[in-house]
Image 1 (cartoon, rainbow, N blue to C red):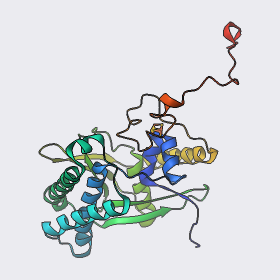
Image 2 (image 1 turned 120 degrees about the vertical axis):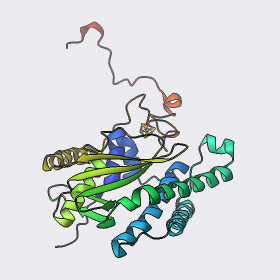
Image 3 (image 1 turned 30 degrees about the vertical axis):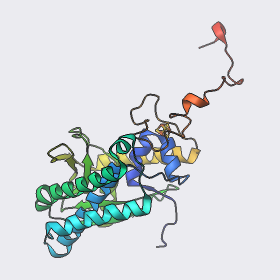
Length: 285
Ligand code: SF4
């Protein structure tokens, strides 16, 4: 069968679309890339270390030495910094950007240690960092992604977070469901459970497991949701985040200072369009 050349929605971008369609379009249609902050860099670096550990376990059944995982974490941190850069937040500038960067790298290595001690020994991975494309035959878009690792009957996404996840966060999560569908299409088997392994970045970091069962009804609902997302994309009209949404802030959105619905709403407000007519008391509901 010929390879699909359709555009594709990345599994990890669906949540962004749910929060702010405009942000999704800026990133994924307009291709506007503004480097993320140090916290994202730390998360990527931890994934770099985990990837090396999981590949080793899949290939040889053996967890490499901690130093190997920490070196891979350090390498990934430097690679992303060099390739994509970083946007420093005001608090980084207060600390000094070199110090903030050094602290972020130290943190990444510390969290890689938590992964190594508290997560990796419990895992028996079948696949690590497996890529997938789900060709949606009746849609103008496909679904692509790459999941962290899966085991015989479960699939896991590794996260680093400032605070604990809601205990129900995995239930119907669009990213996890996309991975479950990817694995189903690749291997012909639907996992029974999806899971976030969250490294909670408190003073003494710890691991929180957030699990959910998966059934065919969940897949059906996910695919219906995806079809609606595609229909929305095809209109070319993208709704900004809800006014007052906490994700619509300088810390959470890289477009905040240029977006007409972010900080710039203060300076771009203009007289009401002449096309809007006040019908006063005559309005007929
Ligand atoms: S600033 Fe707000 S509305 Fe604009 S893209 Fe970001 S989240 Fe969306």
